[in-house]
Length: 283
Image (cartoon, rainbow, N blue to C red; front, side):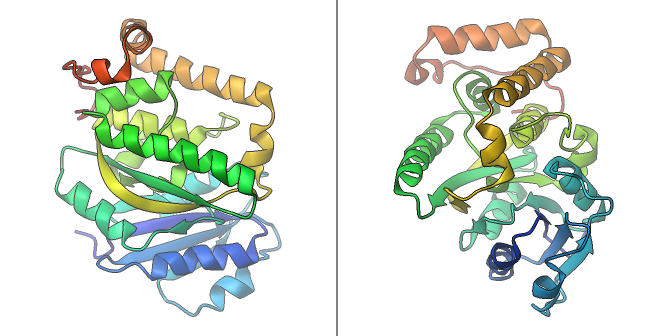
């Protein structure tokens, strides 16, 4: 068994101040052993001095060569091949982990060997009051739904047809599942993290960690925020995610989940004993 509990993979691109804050939020985690793999996606390695200046042996800094040109999925996939931990966590360079979050997720997965993914709360922060209010309301709703959803089948149905319940850095996956899942799909313009964890939950099941996991920065310029403004890319990404689900799991299952989510209020629907055919170890 690996002596490292969690490998935190962190792509970064010209956020020298924020990436150090993100790294420190990992190094402060208690009750787990960690390594932090920082992959600088700039050819000149702009974050080298600040990251290496931390002087912590748990932090590995590499320049991602060649640069991904704005495709974080490519960088995350590279980082996963370097990881040694039992679990993988992908932390965006402008976000921060909540205190005790890695221990909570590791403990939840250790207690549930049938589950491959852990998901928890997202707590947004930022200076833009309107943006923060909007995101806070959304993630409060997502946390309530996530905590009350009875199993992985219902979580899959909800993500597909009523809205995602997580962001990339609020999730953790067993390292041995990453390669069988094919990693992040770099062909999806946006929401490739939703696609990856949707596939992970469908294949291997999940456990919901009912506590804050991630402090999610809002209102700052970012690749995802900029791309997300393009309705065409959002629509294209959603079509790709749904198309992949239909191809992998069949049109019959897809339509059944769609009709059920449309026909029944959530409070009624979640009481039904929904189970999906086992692809991996889905619960």
